[in-house]
Length: 146
Image 1 (cartoon, helix red, strand yellow):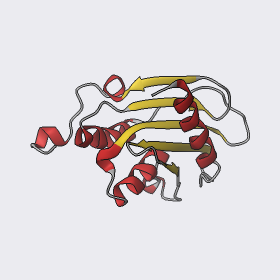
Image 2 (cartoon, rainbow, N blue to C red; image 1 turned 135 degrees about the vertical axis):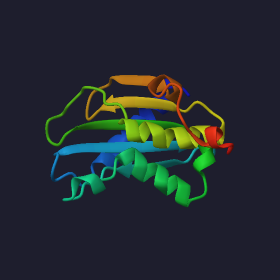
Image 3 (cartoon, helix red, strand yellow; image 1 turned 30 degrees about the vertical axis):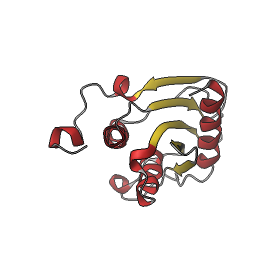
Image 4 (cartoon, one colour; image 1 turned 180 degrees about the vertical axis):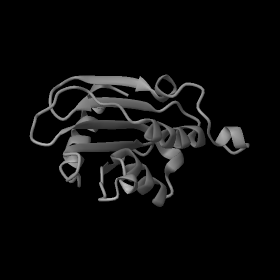
């Protein structure tokens, strides 16, 4: 994964964040998932008045990938977030639940997915391997699936 493609994923995630439904937190998150065929699938957070039913951007994007039958094809993901209208530049990382969802794709695909993290604005990108963000993860391999 080149720096250019990390930047491209962050830009796609920012575009997706523009579709966030975040009336309660005012914190828009966008995700862009790169697949082995070079295609990119995006998602935005989708909040609900019953807060526990809200969906994270990464989950939305990965559920879409799964609906296309390509969960094993995930190579990398770009994630951005920030307060709507504030131009936040601090990089955000996936929450614990999303790290676990990303791990499902990682283990099924047999790869350590790259996670590129950015802010709502700015040039900063922090790149991590999923195994750094979620060490000793529980997943399909622990159930004999893979």
